[in-house]
Length: 205
Image 1 (cartoon, rainbow, N blue to C red):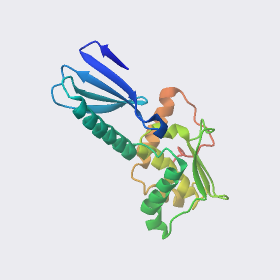
Image 2: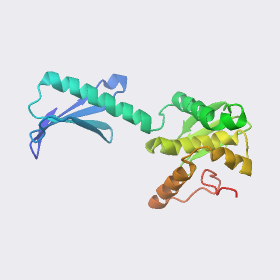
Image 3: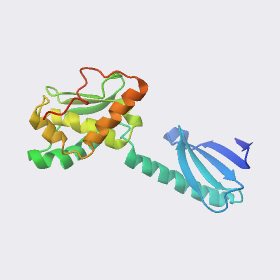
Image 4: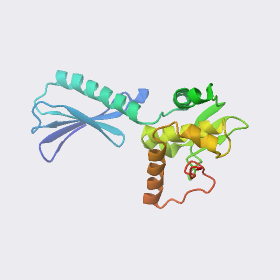
């Protein structure tokens, strides 16, 4: 599909390999753009801006390159999407922030995303070793979901919010920043915190 937008931009939208679950890509040609090529995410679409006079051959090369860069950047800054990737992230966090203090790595039985936690950010059942994270975290920065994940991992070692528990959580350098982010997110949307959600519990002095 091709159409012309105000401002001299021609836009071509394509579904890049929908069968492979690749992102939708939209290429916009601009008469004002002479050499530079940029790309950014716009909801479910990756938009690539290219010069008006760029050849189709060069377009294909630059579009593929810029889409790959956007996806790589998102992989570094967004939470894992699937449960397998989330479990791997849990192992990495446990190795980095908990194992050095404990002398071993906490091993959850399962780590999964769930859609039935609309007020709670995460939960851990120490008796079964299952950790669940709210799917709402998937749209937030990775350092926020990492905090919630580490918080729940620490509960595998210390089920209560004792001083030893908070010493484990404090190994994560973004803990206070992440709590502030989640509190601000709730306040901005008028979302009341679940009294049973311990992710935003006050640190024990």
